[in-house]
Image (cartoon, rainbow over all chains, first blue to last red; front, side, top):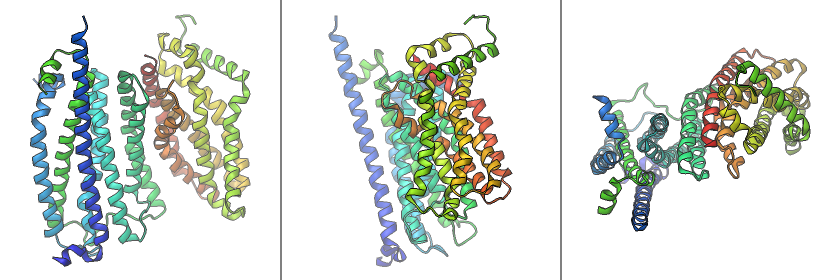
Length: 54
Length: 246
Length: 228
C-alpha cells in the first residue's frame, strides 16, 4: 500500500497532478452552478419588472 | 425528419427542459466512468518499462488535453450554427464551452508540467503538445476577453463567433507549425512509452477516463448553457413557466 | 462613388483615397517603423553585442520585433474610417466588402509592412547577418508581413471601437500569427546559415495566399457585426 502511494518515488508529481485536476473539476462545477443560478435570478427579476410595467 | 429534430433542439424551451433532464445522467455516468478509469489506471495497470510509476499522470493529462481541443471544436461549431441560423441555443452553448475548455487546458498544462519534471528535470519543456496547449489557452482567453469587452450581448455573441471560427481553422495550422518547429530543434516529446504501443491494461483505463471527462464536460456545459439561454431570452413566454417554478 | 463603379474601379479609388489621407499625416504611419528599429536595437543592448552571438538570435529578434510593430500598426487600419462613418459607407455600398477591405489592407501593408521589409536588411546586418543572407531574409519578411497584415485585419475588425482594444487585439492576433512566426524565423535562420530555405519559404507563401483569400472574408463579416 505504501509502495503504491509512493508511486515509485514520483509521488510528489503524481498526487499533486491528481489533486490539481480534482480541484479544477470541482471548481468548474461550482462556477457553473453559480453562473446558472445568477442567470436564473436575473431572468426572474427581469420578468417581474416586465409584469409590473403597465 | 432530421430537420424537425434540429429545430426542436434549437427551440429554447425544449433545450432547457431536455438539458435539465440530461445533467444528472451525465453527472452520474461521469463519476462512474472516472472511478472505473482511476481504478484501472492507478491500481490495476502495470508500471511502464521506461517511466516506472510516474507515467500514471497520463490518466488525467491526456483526457484533459483531448477535451480541451474537443471543447474548442464544439465551441466553434456551436458559434457557426448560431451565426448561420441565428440560434440563441447555439450561442448559449458556445459561451458555455469557453470557461470549461480553458480549465481543461490549464489542467493539461499543469499536469504536463508535473509529468515533465521527473522525465526531463525541469517543470517546463517546449514539447509540441504543451506548446500547442499553451497557445490554445491564449485562444480561449482571447475569445473570453473579446466577449467580456463587448457590452452589447448580440454583438458579443456574433463577434466572438467569428473569432472562434477563425481560431478553429487556424488550430490545425498552429498545431502543424508547432510540430514542425519542435522536430527541427529536436525537442523532447512527453508521450513516449517503453513499449512500441500501449497494452490494453493501460489503454482501457485511459479510454474510460476520456469518456468520463466527456460526460463531465457535457454535464457542466448543460448546466451553464441553461443559464446562458435564460440570459438571452428576453420576453419569451416559456420563461414564465420555467423560471416561476425554479 | 457611383453605384455603377466596377469592383476594380472601386478598389482603385479606395486605394488612392487611403494613400492621400495617409500622406497628410506621414508621422503617424512612420511610427511602427520606428518601433521596429528601436525594439531590434534593444536586444544587443540587453544582451551580448558580440556579432557571432547576435547572429544566432537575429531571426528571432527581427521577427518578434516585426510582429509587435505590425500589431501596433493595426490600430491605424480602421480607426479613422470607423469613427467618421466611412467604413459604414463601404459596407452599405453594395460592393463586396471583403474585396474593399482587401484593398484597404493592401494600402495599410504598403505603408506599414513594406517599410519594415526594406529596413530589415540593415538591421539584420547590424545583428551580424552575412550579405548573402539578405535576399532570403527579404523574401521571408515580404511574405510574412503580408500574412501578418491580413491576419491582423481580422483582429482589428473584431475589436473595432472597443475601449482598450489594443491589448485585446494583441491577445487575439498573436496566437493566430504563430505559424507565420515559426516559418518566417526558421527561413531567416536558414538564410543566415547560408542554407537552402525553400521549404519554410513555400510554407510562408502558402500562409500568405490562404490569408489573402480567407482573411478579408472574415474581416468583412467582423466589420459588419461591429458596425451594427
